[in-house]
Amino acid sequence: MKILFLDVDGVLNGAHTKEREPGGCIGVTQDRCERLRRVLRETKARVVVSSTWRKHAKSMVYLWNELGPDARKAYLGSTPLLGGTRGEEIAMWLRLNEHWGVKRFAIVDDDTDMDPVSDYLVKTETYVGIADEHADKLIVMLNG
Image (tube, rainbow, N blue to C red; front, top):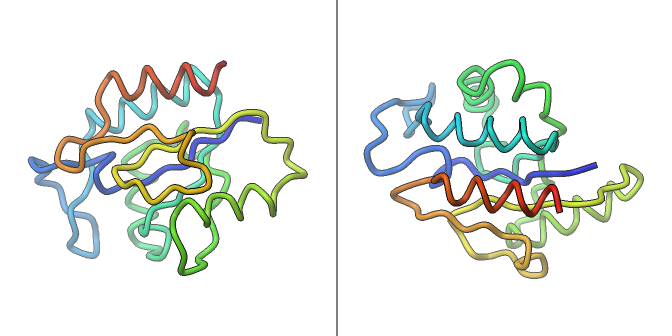
């Protein structure tokens, strides 16, 4: 199984994003969502949300409505809320879910608090979001 750990803010939105999600925070843009959908199509990866959006049900409903049904089918779950770094939460998810047989994984995020899994990070720019080169790199990482 392949897993993509997904952040939302700074990945699926950027400085010019006008859309708002139900809680009033910045939403997502379709060009960035399409890049994520391309990664999922080309890798058949499953999605685990590591974003703070996982704490808000309305935000998650909005996210999956914007990403569409095919991406929604790829959704496997969210990382645990440990109060530590995002990397520690991802590492814990991997330990707790060893039975899934994860063969490859990648992280797409605009932050760098990824120890002990920082080698798997594709870092986006906060005000830009996921670009074609990030999508290409994720595809290579996930497909080997």
